[in-house]
Length: 222
Image (cartoon, rainbow, N blue to C red):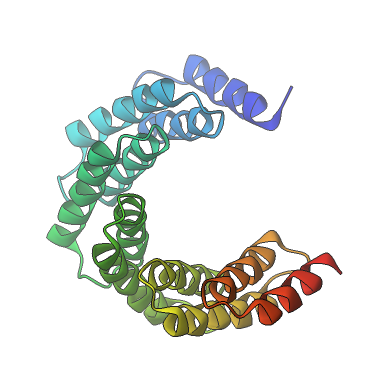
């Protein structure tokens, strides 16, 4: 039995054993939604998240953190299903709810903005994607250590968009910043480091600087 199946079995057992007035049923439903999403069972995931959301809406104020987080989770599932418009709707709903109770620099806003950026990038709306990725990065920099790998992810995402826009020097600048952070904060063989090396190589290919691209390929093969 895989780890996701074990997690699902555990959460379902809790559902069956806990009293009906247990205050954290919404969290259990949310966890089941996460497991179903990880298993690729997206429709079931949405059902669990919706159950969680219904409880939160009924029992918590409209600006409760959990409501925004659940809308974000629903957006992730819609994105995994390829339904970008519903994903964007859910992410924007999460942002709207958070802004009712928190300032724009709340750490979770970085996650919401990043997810919106992903959708715009997939839709090839690169300027919009860049705007949200940069908003996400600005918030992360306020809350995270300078060498945190999440910052490396943001720099990498911004680099991808600049590459797509043909801004090759800016792409390299952001990829190299991403690489610098990841090398300092992650194990040497971490796949995120290899991904950034590959992205740098793609930029050199786009610039017809094949010698530089080959050098990176050789580094990856070591």
